[in-house]
Length: 171
Image (cartoon, rainbow, N blue to C red; front, side, top):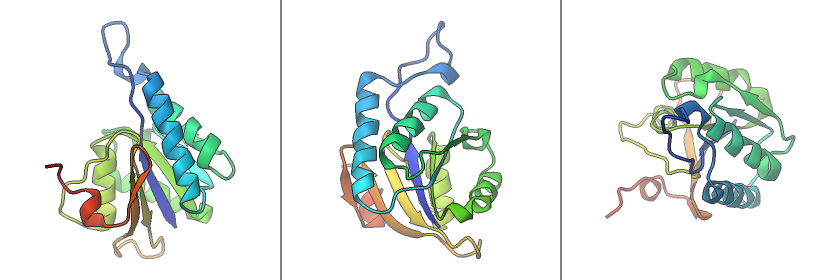
């Protein structure tokens, strides 16, 4: 199964009148999410299903991705993509949708970076920038086998095919 891991786009800052779960995308975030989704659609087969965190900014990002880069435009909301959820349960959820063959998840940091590192079976810390996407090839029949890194798209559509370069610390 191909797994696309997309971090939500830029959102407004939480304040006393706007709790974290209701933060919505900024105009810049909407444009960045659309650009990433359009570029993703050019680089390979489109996901058939998107699973997103229930937080507003993630749902909005997932809807934008579905409009540009999802074959069937199907979006499912799951609390397992919230930052405090269990990675093992999330991996089980992903495997339960293996029939989709190409699946996208939309969520938050540091949860998504931890998911990518866990699937790659690396000790390295992986942090995903807002509106960035990582593509992995997962053997859903063998949970012990590490995922294969395919590519990472940085905001703005720059595609990186080297795992080492994709997550190298900025100098």
